[in-house]
Length: 396
Image 1 (cartoon, rainbow, N blue to C red):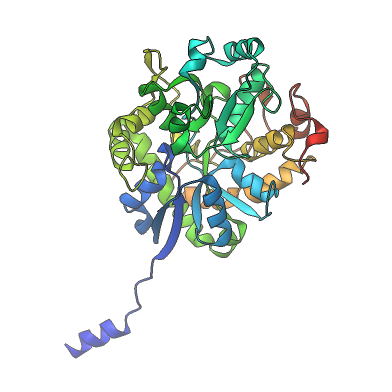
Image 2 (image 1 turned 120 degrees about the vertical axis):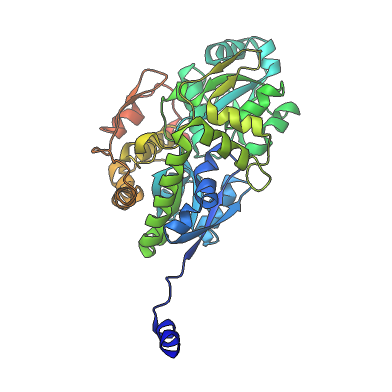
């Protein structure tokens, strides 16, 4: 017995799990982080997610920079805004992986719809007939929803900086702001457009994949300092989230289960039906027409969703430059190569047998017919007819 006790006393201690503070916003695309925790995939890979429900994207950014969060569900463009010091403190950042593609949308008020504005061209026609300046909301100045809104408006011939007023509203407050008449439309993530249309407050003007098919959306982000100091923890977190993403995408039954869980008060705090519609691609235009969208929100797609393509990061910088958020062109390729942690992602993907694309650039055709392939970002950014007045660009 004493020998047994001695063996126990001398045995090496089990490795202690690394606790990671992980922030998320109450949106459908927080699902991979939540499911990685609920399914204990984080523990499987030697880390423990301490999830923190945040209230604004500015709060997510500030907590990442202060160290209150280690990792976060983040807007792609927000990460690059911090990297380039747009509108505030510059800090080196890291995009570890993509969390989802598609699944966002632009909604307009029923008042606008009753006046004939139900899409980009009809909104442009309405603007020519009325004097009142419309107010359209997005969720963060450098974020994805702002860029989808600006790109969509510009494709319809509407200058987002001159022809309308845009302002920032947290996602969960969009429907209430539209109902109160404080805004005329919004660009937001699921399930808030779905809630707006089913409650009769909004009409569906466009889906984000109509602007850019299979576009990148939220990412797993951290500071560069965290990625450099704790690469093992970062790899473990990515491996867990990759497995969770694969689980969600495996079948509709898993999507139903994920929707039911994240609808709870600890996560998105909304109706399960709205989240189920979002994850299954069920759409409602607010006029009574419902359809099944084949380009629903994806979380994995064999790893194609999760790979941190360099061209995806560069695209957001081209739009920041286009709209005057950057006074000068950055070194697009060099910045993306620093931010996108491709090598770290490859290691995490290999650990859970997720295929990795051979190329770090990809090609897409957007709503205005422009092809984006990452080959010449400066020419691409300069090639738009509608863009900010260079004299009005913010100082870098």
